[in-house]
Length: 280
Length: 298
Image (cartoon, rainbow over the protein chains, first blue to last red):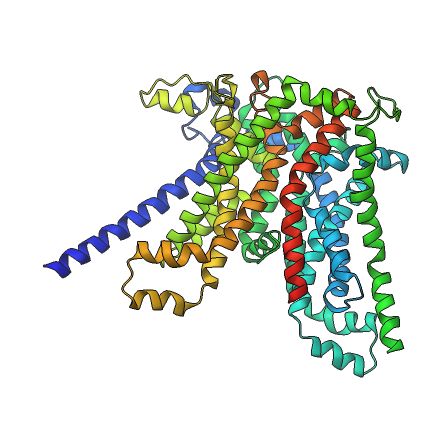
């Protein structure tokens, strides 16, 4: 009797557990439903009565309009994200290597000095940044934005690579030194070939954060023709006539690349995420 | 040994460009911002005449900035509380050998991959008083006319319009806290759990006496990371609600951006940015010092 009772209780707890998990999942997916359901409606079907229903007929009108309006900005985001990510990853790798394996005097202190740059509110450097970029004639341009992302990416990329290289045994470096390899050749012939996992993490991290970034983008690029997709989407959403279907389609367009990266390479995305919390 | 020294010099030279870049773009620019904050620069053209802390006093006296600080306080408390509890709960539930754990985990964490701008657009729609949640509730026969983020009412100094923002921000970061807790839970050695099971501890006892104390360091990490995000919140608010009625959803980040780049009040913008930096530094500097100390010991 007692055992049966305990068993039943266990089964009930199990059901409750899954119930909570499913309710949670539904809550997390509500915005996705909203984006999908609204973006697939035609403009005439978007009205208060139908707001929460599925589209009666699937219409690509919203996507066509969103693509027409945001397509060029999507391209801008690609032109921004690809070079900024590559440069970031390369710089982070070199820095991480030095901070992990060549502890020159004061290296730790300098590393902490660099790391602080990861946490500052970017508002606190925004006015000088705008002035500086204007002076070097990069204000309002994609190269200016690329430079910004590369510089402010140094702390996180350095941190991820440093953590990764710290795990690589020092004996490997010492053996190479005995063989007469110098700093650069150790990097090129020993560390770099082992770096693929760290590069994947950093590339994914930088790619998604640069693609999703808004504050720098909205401050530095005033001209709609050079604006990345996040800024263009905000402008679209702020316009007079509320074409919800176009807005939601635009939002999906802007979300698609990082979402694909997350779904395909989630494991590495999470690793980057956890590296951002410094202590692992 | 001379050879070693030369290599170390070379190593320092390699990171020098990055150090200089960070030195200029982070520290140099902060000093520059501070200089602007104590200047008379109000208008498009720079004016670096020194005026002391006049701008600070004036900014702190504005109704708007006072509201911003209250909003930051309340938002931080509720956002942190909600996000940490949800993240911890989800992690503990997923730890109980759940079938389809991957699917659940993917769903809970995906908001972290998307831009605040995108989620802001979606959540603004959901809490829109006419087409969003209210419309759904009305359809179900519950006539709700609450304005959500357009409601200017307050409970003490707490603006109720912050609630939709707290929910949206928590939605975005709960999965992140969950991931942190999952990593920590997986790091707890098996024998610690087993020992408590042999002692006949119930799940609740095991949770409160063994697991939660072991999770303290990760909770601290989560609070610090979420706290500094909360203190500088901008994108989500800018897109979802803007400053709101009577600054009900205004934050220092929004005020700084608008006053500087829309209103050309540079000195005031710089003041706000310095206050934001100060708030974040209070949280982050002790944390970095502790990490640095541990790093040296290791």
